[in-house]
Image 1 (cartoon, rainbow, N blue to C red):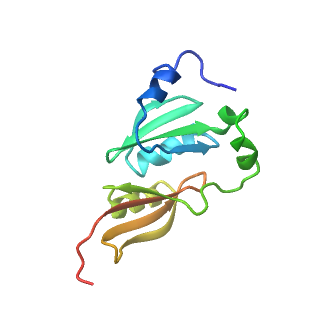
Image 2 (cartoon, rainbow, N blue to C red):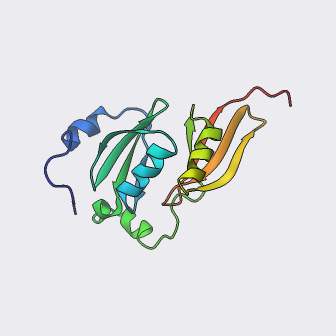
Length: 147
């Protein structure tokens, strides 16, 4: 079921054919709420958004959001329809997004900071943030500690 009125910014087959390498498509309850988190906290820019789908970009990455209602005919719908939290066990890392600033923005806008920014032994400074659907976003930047 589509809620969008009119045409999308480009025909779906054209966008589908443009995708390369690895893409991430997050199923969300409400596009607007997810776009708000990602633009305010992660400073992502919106390539396109309507009530059905959104495409966002940040730090050289591009990803998609699809509203649950667009997956009514998809086998994945049965899995997500009763789920309280999405994305358990997955980290969505956004390399090049300052974790200290992202955590501060998350707090300012009332989102959950699961773990504050910290330098890790693997050479990244990172924090853990939960979005409105329970996806774990991990903004990170290189750190140069002597540990």
